[in-house]
Image (tube, rainbow, N blue to C red; front, side, top):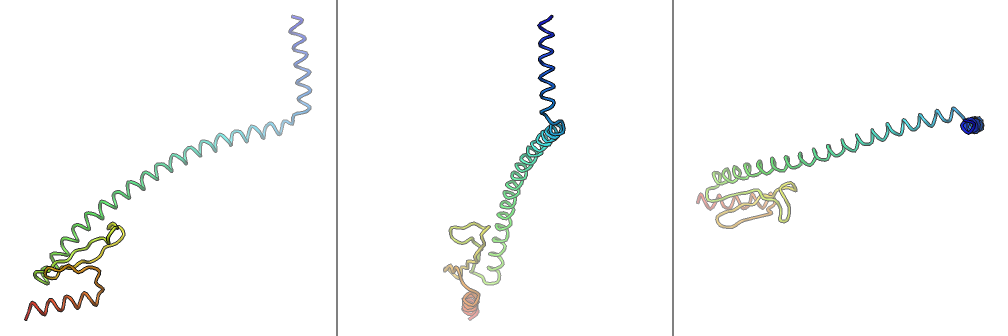
Length: 139
């Protein structure tokens, strides 16, 4: 029992000594800062989780865009060739991506007049070729 009393007295003296050295306002501030730290860490976890969801959504939307673009290109390309053939029988036209690129990078008009494929024609060259072919057809 005397041992416990001496331990209590020793601890009480240490407490009084520390009480004079420790600022209670600072201790309250430390507690407040620690709570803010925990709150910020939770918010950071939420932001990182949301970032991952947004990145996944962007990837899925990009895939959807590519699929829709592919379907649209196939439909337009087929219709374009048929219309061109109706206007100039025996000819054909198609829309193709430039060599080494995808349809997302752009398309080029390629025209088949007779049995010769013409690619990369500028507007003036294209009209000259078509006019020449039309003149041959109706002579």
